[in-house]
Amino acid sequence: MSAEAERKTQNLPQWKKEEVDELAELIESYESVGIVGIAGIPSKQLQDMRRDLHGTAELRVSRNTLQVRALEDAGLGDLVEHVEGQVGLVGTNDNPFALYKELEASKTPAPINEGEVAPNDIVIPEGDTGVDPGPFVGELQSVGANARIEDGSIQVMEDSTVLEAGEEVSADLSNVLNELGIEPKEVGLDLRAVVAEGTLFDPEDLDIDVDAYESDIATAAARARNLSINATFPTASTAPTLIAKATGEAKSLGLQAAIEDEALMPDLVSKADAQLRALAAQIDDEEALPEELQGVEAPAAQADADDEGEEESTDDQEAEADEADTDDDDDDDEDGGGGEGLGAMFG
Image (cartoon, rainbow, N blue to C red):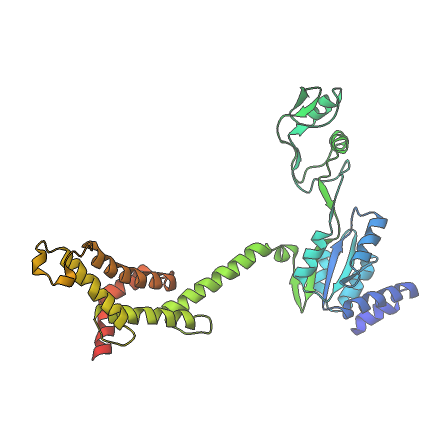
């Protein structure tokens, strides 16, 4: 505590000193400290919220001047500007994102009263109000709802926006909403700002879509994997795919070049047999054929299909590994990159 701060504290009444000390203890006890708005929360509900936070966060409500003094003494001046209206201090060892999520989840719907400002657009939904025909239909119409009597009850014919965000609620609208059981606002601890490890976070910084964030991470990981495969950069994740791709390409090359390798012999024999049968099927004079080839019925497309099958197999493997290839990569391949590779392989 600075000498000036200590002097100011000495001038305080004893009970205020004790209160500032308790606030300072809260600030020092937690890794993250924030300011929460508590306006409009009934005392009993506030106590329930305090109890629900037990074990995760600690909430303390005090006079604003004492909160400001404690924050300034702790070097958290960035939070001082958020100490306005009815607020309290909250401390937690969770990260600010978890704190914001928990506070938002704890909010509950509540009716809105005359004179309050609408936090968002207030809409009376389409449907049966459940109210018997009577003067209430006029009240609905007076606040801007498209309502009329049908089938023995008052019906709202379409979703009706009766007040826009930021506008003040009138007495008539408050009565109509209460009659319909519409609770257009949420009551709860409103996080205004929080400091963690010297960094100030506003609510806008903490309000993230977790599902969208996880989706972005998954997309980034998939693109990184494709980049690694296309660049032939082996990692623990991409090595199996690179090996499978190389194996498929080597086998395809061996079959196309008729390389007499032990592993390729069954495929080479099958390919040669299919080609022979396809050729024999094209000869009309069976006496010109050896006895074992006479009467062979193999469509001419069979041999071509075998060749195409090999090419498609290779194409499928390459397509699976090269989803992120660009047109530039394709141009490079057409310009002879593959020819150079074969030249290096066969000397």
